[in-house]
Image (cartoon, rainbow, N blue to C red; front, side, top):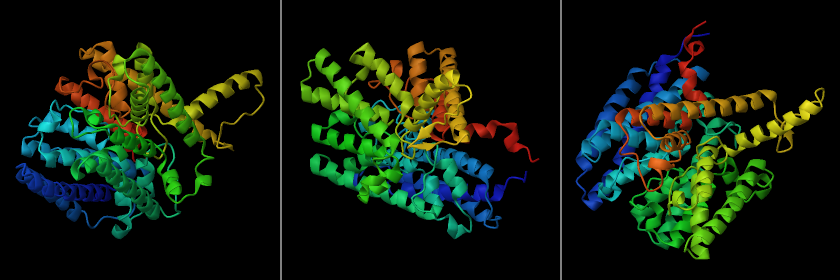
Length: 484
């Protein structure tokens, strides 16, 4: 096994920090427009990030243009870590979040699109900082690594290894044979949907600032809001628009590309998409009937609240319009289960993903047939095609590892003094990148009361969940670092 190419790893990490610094500068016009006084802190944060990232980038210009899987895993993980560390600086230097542990937690939650927050009064923050908060989720949603893939050829290196390590979901379906074109088209779809949602939200009720911030966090399935009441602060029209775009953000972006082009024949045969669509409709119907029958809400509000919460939690967005833990014990249990599911592979949502659950369930049912017919061969089929055994084993391994991390995380939080419901709720929502959970971290609560060690641990779970478990955990194996 060849040695790690550290120069190219650091070169790309430096480039990511430079891009992060440029992103901070986008907050300055909002600071000047609203006269919130935060521009000095933001400018200082950008300058420090640019100085460090630029220095790393320039000192590694003589890198050897070769990158393998191991470098890809390191770039993705270290890239996210350095983005988080530098991304916390605007909070610290403006005094918006003065404590490092809190700023680190909020930034990890942003870039991983989790949406968990330590803020008790969101509306008290400078508007430019609220913009940065939403922007971190938008960048993290599709992955700043994928953005970098589009320009890596300019540096003399390819991006397939990075794309495979970063792309959400068990597979990285390609729209175009060339990975650079794939990344560009994915980002084009992402930007287009964000722009369309912004326009619709402005037409419905919001001003440009709030429409842009909520479009950022909707398409990223992140859930950060500019209001303390989250989506409940807005009227039905806004909520229905957000439902539509949360749903689209939970669809494989390859399918969104074909949807935009009007190629429905490439969309409807997709088994994961059909499962996703029918799951949303069925769960929304059940939730609507229960909420209508157990609360004083009329039918329209019951339907809107039920559909909104189902789509928000299933896609791991985390916006709320009602306290779903106050409805019925059955619905609380249902939403807890949904914390694990997530949207489609290749979407910006977190969680296990629907396609993995589909494969696990199908394989389990086939095991019953294999017991009765031990000599027969029953392959797991998806979209009418037989899956390679290695893919099935990979998904089963991922599922087992995900559950193991959940159990371990719940035990760690319990040892820290969390009650059982809060421990499992905080672990599930952090690992699934959802945001609200159950117990002390429910939709009407936040994470401000958690101790610093607890925040750092939950931030680690967010990172592990966002980078699809294997990408982070493989770095802790001896084989990864052994050069033989």
